[in-house]
Length: 346
Image 1 (cartoon, rainbow, N blue to C red):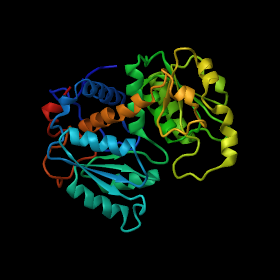
Image 2: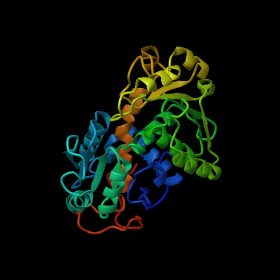
Image 3: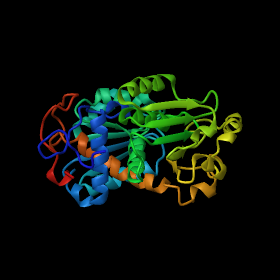
């Protein structure tokens, strides 16, 4: 993986070819590598991003509760000299008071970027379709969690993950995080094994797109119901069995019981295998305390890297747009414009 951006403007800071990032699949391989390279550089030297968002405002629009996503975005925007504006929609879903279209048309006149954590993917897609002047970032929906996947791969790479020869194992529900990890793996060409109970696998449409892309990149995507398939994985990744907003289900908990990540399952993976979790974790359910708190657990590294990966994503998304007040329509493809502030260049 490249350690620094290598495409785009003369200063090396690459604008993305997409205006919005609603799913990892919106990004090309070189863009993913550029973002991850920038994230690693900003983690080593945070001062490189000083002033990168000076004079810019980022709207944080949340329909769901959040610890990591909200805090890391607010802190990140502040560190880069920008203003984060939090809009709490936990008690009033988007579209209830006024149309999502009108909401987005308002926000694009004030803010330079919109970060949306929503219940349904259709909501963030409609918001992006309305707010054509500024980038929209999906900070989690029912189908995708691109920011989490970027931070996860940053964590894997800094631990020595080889994109051509290493493999990640997902154990649990085929949910939004699983989808984004599969998409990212298919883009960069690495292996991922998805282990789920029957009837709880990833969305077939998402899986189909990932398999098709893997034929071009050399990625390997396996889906199985056998927990022993974690054998030889570089890392074992778990997530909550009942997603946020999903009704509790005793039947689902029974179906998932043999997919708990415990000492025995980690032993199957191998003595060097890492443990990953996007948090919050339900200790004793999808993972035991013994695994969660072990030296092989990198869950808090993942949480920290949300800050760096998201900062990098914002820098690349805004690289092609000037820091002037919103109001000038932007093309969907960022084909030109002003370069990112020099302070943001790794």
